[in-house]
Length: 251
Image (cartoon, rainbow, N blue to C red; front, side):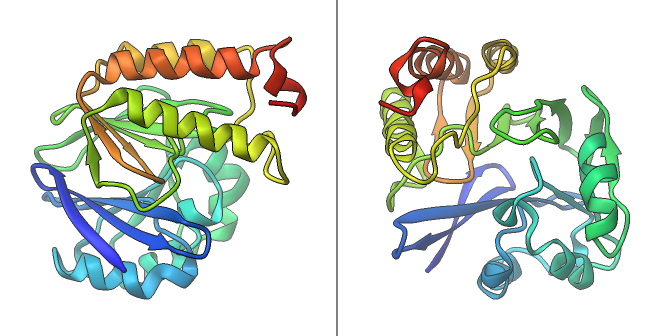
């Protein structure tokens, strides 16, 4: 089942829970002069997600389609959305555009430089280049300056059929920690690489002082996003920095 929740004015979380893997997949739709969809969802989910979008706007109005990195749940249904919305254009990092999307997609992407701003009407999206955060060379995130929302992809990934919005940073960070430990103990180990730039990148994001952290998997956090990101930086450092138990795949 796909649920729709308005998490900020004209910013909607569209979430589908998959019971077989007990995981939510969320897309975020910004209804504006030039509507923006962040995450396309998997191709198999396209019909459900499209129906949810149709409850909010005509999908043909979508102008921008954003995502963090080249992965099926991030942009697997990109071509379906580009077909449904003839004026739509993908936006992603320069690496993402030239290495993947301009070959994969039916129309070229708009490459975004670090700190470049996209205005969709009343919303202003600042693109942040974040290689390997959460993962992949081409990774980037978007910060919507008007609402203070960081579209943070797989950061704060939580399992389960959880609430759409949580005001508890402790709950969100702990759920994420449990996911990382569980993944590290099985075939999905090294889901989020810890590099010499990880801590610096998370602290840079914290300086944005977001009031919402909109993750693809699990609850959007509403509250002191700066502190939540600092808590995330500390938690991942304690787990994965060189010399820590989980860094060797033995949590």
